[in-house]
Image (cartoon, rainbow over all chains, first blue to last red; front, side):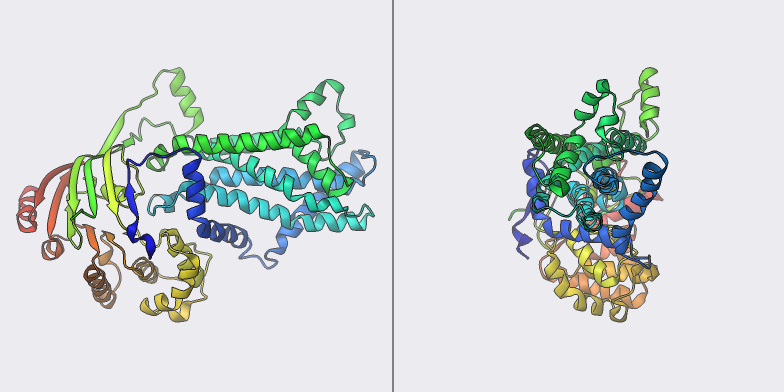
Length: 276
Length: 244
């Protein structure tokens, strides 16, 4: 092993952001293993296995479709309601799952973190990345439905990695802040679930923006998730760029949130393990 | 020669559990009542020592003396609250072996995962799976989820992974006392091999005769403070007298 030259000095200064990025790179092998473990263990004991990843969004969509297209009718001009609904749900689920998993990562892995030295951010980031992989897998049912309903899949779908990377960064940023807070106060995780629900209802997933009263529209548009959703829908089925404003807002909120999350996490790191 | 482990005026503090607000709700209540406390419990304080290459350094003391916290500081798990610790070289932490095992994964998958947690490369671990299983005498269980393993089997697997590569520092917390007689003999042989390879050992143990027999120096701790440091026979004798 080349580790023979490795020196651990507790006085070594920790530079926020730089240290985290360096740690993640050094432990990239572990990061990959943890992501795979996250994705496989969840379904290990079920007969359908990984197929659940495909079925889950479809089943949830089916329920919402019955409720919102048969009982409460919403018109979504230019696109079938199922496509509108599923595309919105994918973004919101990605964000919700990612934030919840990243936020709980430290608490869930406390038994490892208090016995073996592993940079804590590796666990947090792996949960966020696993949510992103789940999102990519669930694009398959979305595209299938687009083909079935005759919406088709435009070439711009190849650009989906852009909102994907941006939303991963944004989700990780929010999740890291929650992960740090959850160590101090356990109920932060419960509050997070409420917060996620609130934020999810504030973006037009199952309702068109046109039914929202004029005075509430700014409230929706200020939600960063809205910009991610608009950009994603633009690429996934509208076949074009969303307004530049949404694109810029998405990019800025992704970068700012990730930096903020890493910074908060880095600042509180020293207290983390002692509290676990 | 530079020592492998250096602890300088090391201190580790925990926030006192009875005062710590576990939830945001409790914290809010305490804040309103102005009862938020920043009282600390020093698990380790004012501890300084050096461990040279190939040395066996033992720490003894009653429960709650701060021995485990000290080990975790050397294993890089706990950052010191004050003072400084320097460790030159790779550490094989044998603190609750197999803490990184996932019950749903198979023995094969867990070897790779645990080894990677210990800082080794996944590709390297994949090559080592067969040898590790053979040493642990678990080859036939390669594809069995470890949730069906017995405690002894888990300990063997954890030990086999942790000691698979030559470390510069072995941090040992009573693990030698797990498993049956055969396994104990074999694990002791493995540790002797690693020592012959130049590993230093930081040993925490209640087995005073083992400490006397193997350690080159002993530190006796009580309430987080070092009581005595020196020759094994002297320190163990003084500790025996003190504890009655």
